Length: 434
Image (tube, rainbow, N blue to C red; front, side):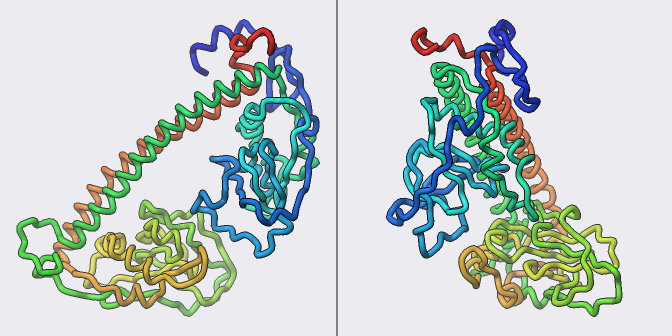
């Protein structure tokens, strides 16, 4: 908690809210239900209005303002719900992730959302912060249910019965103003950290590309292509077997790795694999293989790994993963770094086939991708050099991630303490508003 408020917090008279996950609130605050503040509504037929979306980080925003929303709107917008400025919008399948917000835009949202209009005079900015605070998001998760985690539904009946602590309108405004200032400062610092991460990530890519295309000897004689003159031209299929198949033995279970098992850091997550019954049509995965995700946006993000640590007799990879089994002509670490080269990423993205957000890099592209290959001893030296360089960059990225996590936790704590009155802002309220 910010030190400036500790003294006033101790002097304020508090009471038990009667709700464990809210805790104590100031004695002069009321505890109401969400249905006392909002009433669900449904207005359709406004096909001319702007499409809106709800984001856990950004609240309600015009859909066209974001390029990371792969959900395609229906061809018929007549069932989409009209939202006015000040309406509360909930994505019922993602409320538990924080997709709930008071809208500052007018437009239409999916029929699968809930839309509710305000019933009383209140600071909508305060309510916006309150209903998106961490304790409320945890509560949405506890109340949501469904077969699949990513599609857990929160019923509106459960939402409208939720308790909501409400101070005077003046204190609501004071809290909202305070949180706007504090979260803006934290968000600015988070944005700065993100910019530093982007610079480091680009440096990582450039470092890898420079080494695998030009080598480490700056005085070497170069070809017109920019590669050392003693390097030879090969294709991936000359140095690795693609998507090796296997005649499955009669096993009760087979370890199966989805695309999510591959990390951008070059590792394979065993926490993402599962055991499946007999299955066909998949590629075999074994220690020493190099693999990469071939579906957008994972391919462009460089999700690839060297397979290590497999203990199962049989491990299979989803068809969304391309397996490369290097032969004796190439060092597996060098091959892994080579497919992280900028040309592989750019050329592969240009060759992608498919519709919408499910474009894939064809196997033909990977097989025929041509590159300059150094002798084995030089491959080892380049791989070792890049191990050292990328480890240093990854350590800096990890430090930035840790700093960002601390700021995010601070942001959550400040919001919770403020919207439940544990940070005393009553002194900022004018006499007329108390």
